[in-house]
Image (cartoon, rainbow, N blue to C red; front, side, top):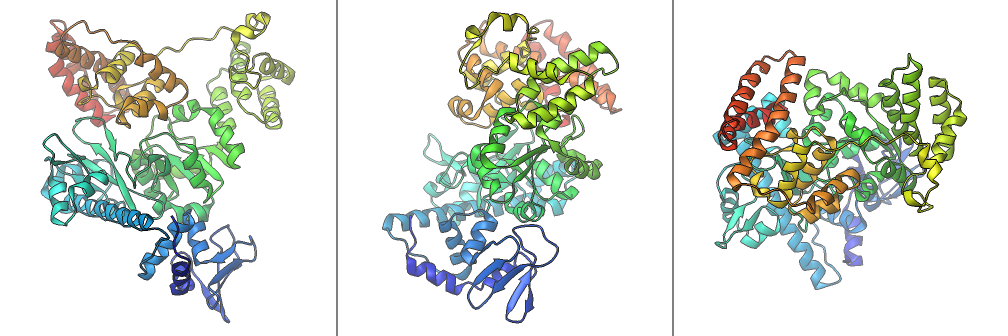
Length: 597
């Protein structure tokens, strides 16, 4: 798609570059020029100069220069056409394209964008003003988010009812095709538009330019998956979207650092705690496209995931990204088991300190092994050394690896030669040599300590297997809070984020993908009527999850722990006479686990 050259020239001429840049940074007039602090690098003395007559800027320090289009492209991470279209809209210029099809495509996108914006406004009004949004307001208050936070992040409430949004959009002259193509509804069997989101807290998702493209939606009553995202549309491409980047990009550039976290409320919590450069993926794992987008703003990435998730994340992927995209990856050591979306109101300084004290990815993993080790005994140090070998082997740079080897050897009191020999003795399965276990020297394998299997809990596997083969049995009650095993948790998350199994499989990797592939070819044991199977799954899944919840509440001194044990006893007692009898009391635990976890 190309914009006519004369229209590009009109956009340049119509754009007041001083006014444009002044929206992002403070400029001071010096003679005929305007100067300020460069937005493309950190500096204390202004070296960024703007020539209003020529419509150009130049930084005498970092050498960045260009016109208004270049400025918008670099600061907002847009391509050329997107930047021109942004400035044209700002100047009120109707662009023409070099083909009729391109022009129609642009008009179609503008129509869909307008529909999504109308939906954002509709949901936002319901949350702030309508009695139907009271439950969502109560939930937000329980998480520490007040009305100002709801306005800042334009949160909304999708009401119950099959077509309330659709009828509202009809009144605004949007067609059924517009509403469906924007991902706001689907056409049911009666050939009527049925709202895609119902009875959910709505998090509008904007592209990096601040244009609304879709939603992430959280259920508050356990109906369906905890989070549901807009399906892929002409506007919404999850692999190219990062929640919060539209708000955070200026701070990311100014701080030369981006914080990547797991969820929408995590982004909100970081921002409210004083870390406004946080973003999150939108119902999918971080992908190459996300890293490429962030690279336009900064080379410095901080992972603010749950400590276990950060430690078990595919290290090879991060090291490849570091080399391929020339980025630096660090990990923020968050308090174990604490959600940034909750921690910000209890101890906001803890979030700030975790980011400020972030360590390189390899250092984080080494520190975790050493922190868990018994360094006071020879046996404990030997065990730590063995556990460090595969961690150290992960890093592809030999010089970097050598420095960590020396540190580990000094800490544990072992000769660094032992580490080098141990690392060389057992190359990874995916090594460049392409050898597999059967092709390696048998003596090498006999010298290795046995690999301890880490099976997923059988009950968690069972419910995942049914989630794949017959999702209707679990769709209205199962969510991620029921999974203690990180691999099973990741498998459920990716299943819940996608509309069909094949999409979920393509979005997964490593142990999660291996588990999904295995469960997909294992038939679940259909040994009873569906109602009985459903009841069995609920009881078998909820009991261990409730036991974990109770232990946590007791450790935290939370009085709600006293409510859990009697309900657990009721579930076990009822289930003793049949799975169906145990379902009703188990559903009360389902609600508690979803709400209190």
